[in-house]
Image 1 (cartoon, rainbow, N blue to C red):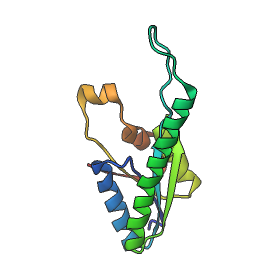
Image 2: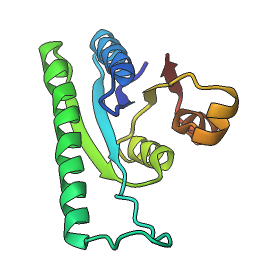
Image 3: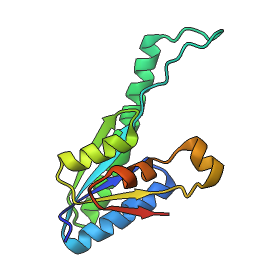
Image 4: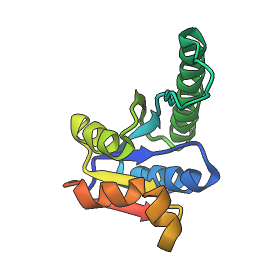
Length: 147
């Protein structure tokens, strides 16, 4: 059935549900898992009256975010190993989360994407957007969404 599953995580409690389900499914199917955390770029905009941003500080912050992301996916790897599941930890830096999820799944030959949804609707969904919805809309790979 599924041989390689991509699980997208942001390290939150809700995304942990997606991780747990992806690992359980992979264990039952003897599949591999690609654990992905997408790290955004530090927002840099110059609004009137704002202080200039020190590029070294921005670089330091982005490095810290990448290190934190690596720890998140390494935790998935450790959990997978405890269940006998091979996990490839993967991080990516991009502001286009949904596109990065799909591209990473395609790059690694994944045949299922597992993600959590925050379950927003109405105005909150319109204002905040939904990366999960974007993946559902644009992916040619099946997507399992957990709430």
